[in-house]
Length: 442
Image (cartoon, rainbow, N blue to C red):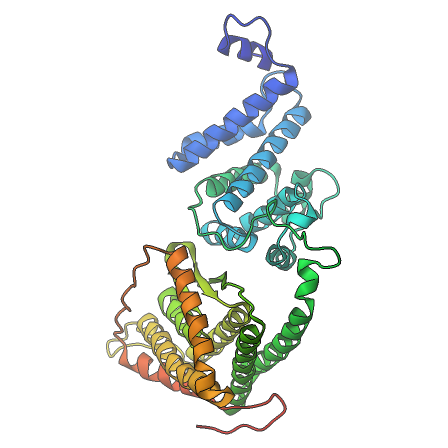
């Protein structure tokens, strides 16, 4: 049966059907929608049957023509899914990370390409700088020269059926994304309009330049701390990095108070991955609190939303990443564990290790933050920092009005707890230092 005859049977009494091209597009859209529904209800047999129908041209329809129609249909549905994700508060990095977590790295790469394709529909002037940074990190650009599905299959080393399956699975994933609190304007709504002779980007260019210089030095220090085999050297390097971040945050707070800058707290989402995601989330929470930020963990989504002022957010992300690298290295170095009967105790040991590490790091970071504040201005600084704390708390209450505090999980491996606290002691982050100066231990 031809596509036109199928349409006539479905629309009896209508004098004329759609054009052959429109009928093919309608048929492909219907098959794709049914495949998504089959996937949603877990009907593998129906899903495979529908994928076959999407891959195989119906009746007398030219195979190349059908493939072009189905590819464009799936591409449009993926782009629509990306648009819906933006409307629900998701950002590019969130979508790609979630696709990798729920599906595979291949789906994440397909999502990245769908994002790149969808972003071409927006004016450059309506894309927020934070989105630009994420797109650059993801490498979200239209790298293909001709039809994307063919280029994608060639890059992935797969056949066209794999593309169709991956595309339908991604459409299903995007369709069911939960709504998240918005953190900045989505593309199409941001504007760089400013008074003549001034632009929003120019106004903060100098501040960002200073930020990048400082953050670059911090990154270099933390990279050395992660790579060294000597605990004392890692301790000194981490302490120097923490000192720079603390001073950087305090300088920003004082400058904002002096100039009357009323900028509100911002937010970013930081991955918290398995295994041992619970103690990792605790570590992120204590790092955030020590840097005057707040973290809210979304366990099912694999990330935490961290709210705070921009300089503090950058410090939290870098410090958390570095401490996690150092903790993981120490934990793996400790090796596997077994009980007296030879049963594995490695998982409970590592869970306890990371929980203890987070608890001890929290203690030391709070001490370091208190000393940094006292040395930078003492009582004169307290009202400034208190005002920023209130602003962050208000942002959390606004974004998460029904937030409930969870209870920390129990720890059943004493050896892991002791080892974790010892590792945290080696990652000491206190002391007032300069990058090129000397260090002292507490």
